[in-house]
Figure 1 (cartoon, rainbow, N blue to C red):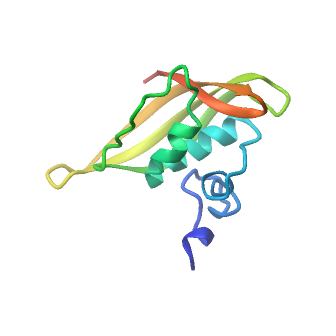
Figure 2: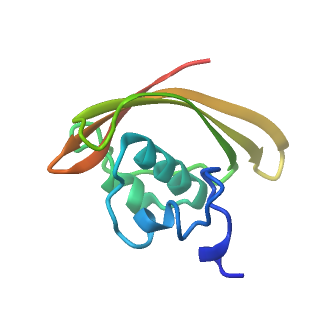
Length: 135
């Protein structure tokens, strides 16, 4: 089985190619804020910094993005969405992303990131603006 046929890291139940791979590898635009958020989670899980930067709004995007190699992302739970549909220009997605630390000294320590992310749609393209960290 190829990576394209593996289950998508975002937890949708679809294969990577049918789900987030359409956006990360094939260059299609995510149709909703939630689809973009899921694909960005997959970008973190697969360390696709080019995609993460490309889908980050220019007003808040860092010049360089360095990911922590010790963080292994293993599950995404979408809690709630507000707007962010195909006809909206803005939306929010609340989610919990679960990770495990494996840096050679601390192995298996688990954590979670609870965030409510803000998205805007400009020129038909959804972009991540920022997020508020929760619990």
